[in-house]
Length: 253
Figure (cartoon, rainbow, N blue to C red):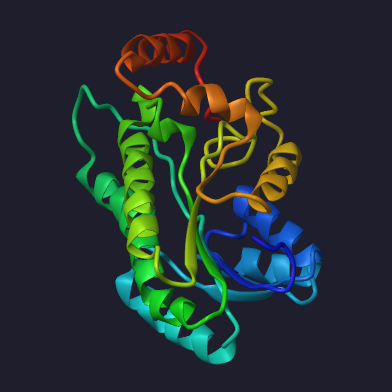
């Protein structure tokens, strides 16, 4: 995709990967609109980046999505890129009791959120000469982390949905891309400087570079072994991956 001259809407853009992508695209000459739940953080990003617009949005709320989409289409008729980045990553126990309220919030945010956001904008995007839906999944779509079993499952679902969405829109002006990050050092879980995590600036720089020529997926080099593991022999690697993290867990505080 061309990396300048777009009008970009990004969800979950007040911190971590979302904010870094928003700021990078803003610096490249795109009109960027950032959505997030926390007004204080929206105000902070707008003040730090004159020209970025912001809007309050909880992607777990269908009514809010519909209202915000209508508002932004009216305010920004050239809007041609939607980045579904918002997500949450709570720990859970697939071998124990279910926190039902947490599970519902997770599925509403990570799975139904991107589906609903895409649906709210897609007819508008079809009217643009060149437009994009970009879904942020995770390498955990391919190598699930047992400690975040339902999160991993929602990302696997987003990968699957993205492939169907790409096919469904094949005869339109809308291209569908997927970004599958590795463990990036952000506050999604706990920003810790862990050497196993990819630095945020390095991740965004490589992702932006790969976006320019991407036709399906954007997978940074560090993430490719996990992306390529899926298949009939994947089980041993998944077992080894989870055993290694069980012995040396991701810091959470």
